[in-house]
Image (cartoon, one colour):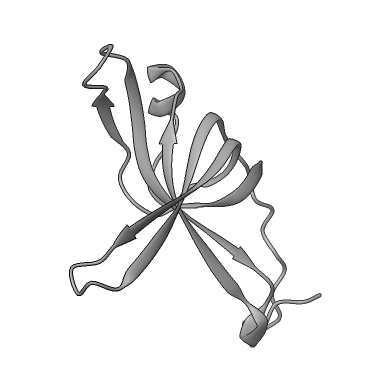
Length: 110
């Protein structure tokens, strides 16, 4: 799967309890649509990338994820079911976004 969105949290380096492999975790928000039709999908990302690649990432940055999508189902503290989208990312690429032109009122031109 591929997803495009903004890194929403600080990137944390972690070490697996079994095997000692290092990985990185963060949350990402993917916005689809415009204005009142816009929806946001949240992902919890586990990224198996190099430290060099992780150093190029920061909160707020627009990125492209490539990896595998999983759904983690769980019971909340109030005993209601919950679920989380988790992306096991094997590649995280910063994407340069083009600036959009604005008129004098600050509205974007299409």
